[in-house]
Length: 582
Image (cartoon, rainbow, N blue to C red; front, side, top):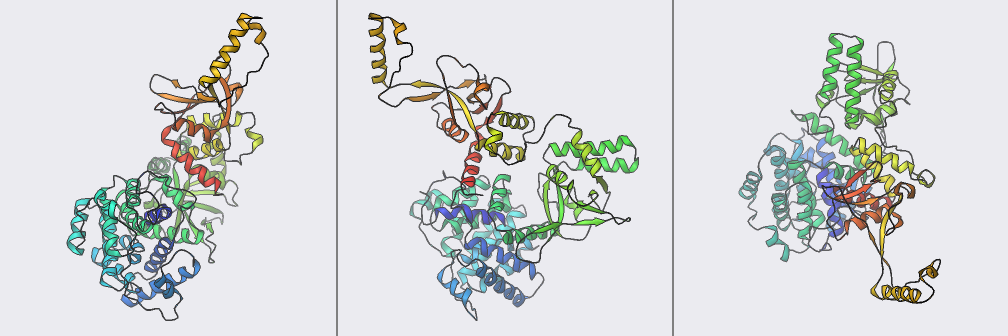
């Protein structure tokens, strides 16, 4: 479902053909916010979860109530005229619409049910409360069916064959054929086929999103539909997933957490979650400790946790959401036989599903263990429903102390001008990231870099006119008082001076050098000036360099840290969010 919401957010700024019909655009910016598509996607998901197992009338009543409740919560999300009237009506009735609203909000139906028949029935019911025109119903059923088939391992060819055969949509045109004449239209019959085609042509989740936006038209809705299918087929890139979550208000995020928990609990297979992969080494170490509870096996458990912590491993944590609309939650605790409290954590969904169902979140082991040291409990109990392990605060401190003087995690403290002043804080953060390049460390380092100035070696290139004037001054001195007479004199250029940064080659690629301080840069040669600029400006210079660069190298002559160009887009995205106060 988050894939549909991401599609809405990313497509929203480019609605009404404002994106130039290109795939080359920033994924996130100031205007990348959720619209009515996301609000109603959340509303339908909540209604379907609340009414699971109900008859047709119960499901339709739940959908009606949920959409009206969420519509009142977010009245300015961009609803169509007829739907706005339906939201405000004392006695809401379906109004015969074949608009694409029925298809944009239906992604959850493709995830929550075990059969294609039940998926289509519930998709139809979510449409009928407003969009009871045959085309409106067909659009909802087709979109939900595509999600169902994608998440159940059907190939793109099989999905295409089903959509064409069951719903009669024309999927013969390519996106290149659709794009030139496509315009803003809000009907199912001119949105759903285009969204499915964008999914069929896309190479991964991001490429599906970019392809859908490039078609233009009502592209927040079109991309919402395509994004829902693409998530089911490809999964979500971590950075995009976290960015999408960060742009949701807490009440919507709460429904999303509940939805994911419902989907995961209903699945016979463990969901794809790379941050839990590898946690089996902890389970194996705990098993050995049960077989022979000696110090060697105890240290084996602690070592396994420490290694997974360094690999950016996660635990799953059961949580309890507040009853109000704040979206806040508290961690679940378990009481042992002595009445002591422990924070519950799980290494896998299989371990979690051994107990009572609840809402769950995942978090980095490092962050969670650090936070637990300040909780009013004894520590963390790992896998409380199976082979459990009591990770006391004393044992947690032993894990952190095992690193000795080696730092593995970039500091998360607030970045101030004072700590950045001499460049040592940045140098230390870069060295830690070089040692342990986890996603968390990458995000933290970029936050530091975006607040930092760096030093760049540049050659000053004057215009031909200024070079000519300088040469005249030199010749005059040679023919008169001598070159020594120029010492201490100033030469003012008439034209702008172009600063050209140096480029380094390490035998494998070309890199733009930056330094955390002037001292770190040292003596760089008589032909170079030391220029202090923001790191963001340095990234822009590297991106726009005449030479094809592989990235930026920080502190090349002491502790070189290579910042590859693949991270540049993440820098720009985080810079945009920082400007918006996010």
